[in-house]
Image 1 (tube, helix red, strand yellow):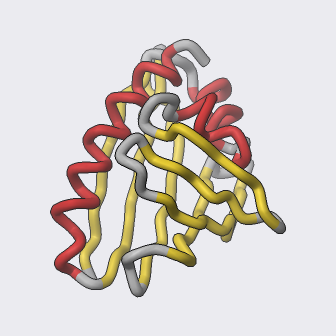
Image 2 (image 1 turned 180 degrees about the vertical axis):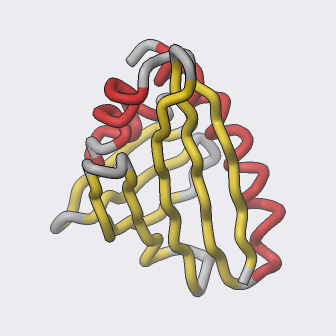
Amino acid sequence: MATLKKEIPVNAGATPVWHAIRDFGAVHTKVAPGFLTGLEMDQGDRILTFFNGMVARERLVTLDDENCRLVYAVIDGQASHYNAAVQVFPEGDGSRIVWTIDLLPNELAPAIGTLMDVAATAMKKALAAA
């Protein structure tokens, strides 16, 4: 199983960053606008449209306010297994996001890693305004 990890420094405090990330149904407007171009909620799942036209159905697994940690799984997409955790940590005057994805098949890792890099740029910009 491939594990991808991205640490994203953000020029905003952990509390407002966490409040944006924890809003599962607004990731396309609060967390990664431009990277995500659409979102539809369906029976608690979010169906996301990405800037490249890709569509994925994600299910919320854990929402942990005490540890500022959100876990989701992609349940409809190219991967046979895709589980991700996003956690926010205070860091100086700002915060740091740690985003970890466990993924099968391993061959998808380079493409998903590239998408994480693009997403991180959008996230850093959007969350700095949080």
